[in-house]
Length: 136
Image (cartoon, rainbow, N blue to C red):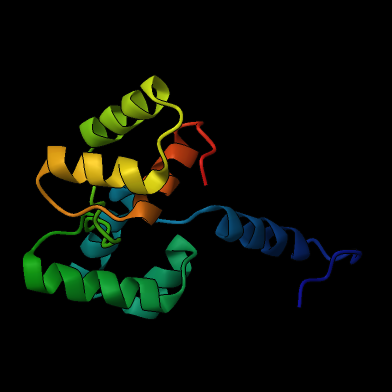
């Protein structure tokens, strides 16, 4: 536990350390390569983690990734792929603005025909909501 009202000066670096950890989501590339360099020279993973102010599991995953791929840079995100492209979204918004009486289901069938792949009513509704047309 951090001591906030202590007269001990060692509490200040702990507070700064905790604050810096809470604000940072990813290691920057230069820090990743620095960690790999330390590990290649024989440093322990726990010592590297302490030096870079990260959890040891971060260094462990980084080292495993480096040993497999010989690369320390971040991997691409693995979220769900979007079914509609940016051009599809623009086309959808354009159609919706031209004919404001069309329902999301009608717009979905129109976009499906234009794109050549099935697109659900719910997807169309989300895209219209993102684009500023609140047609739910």
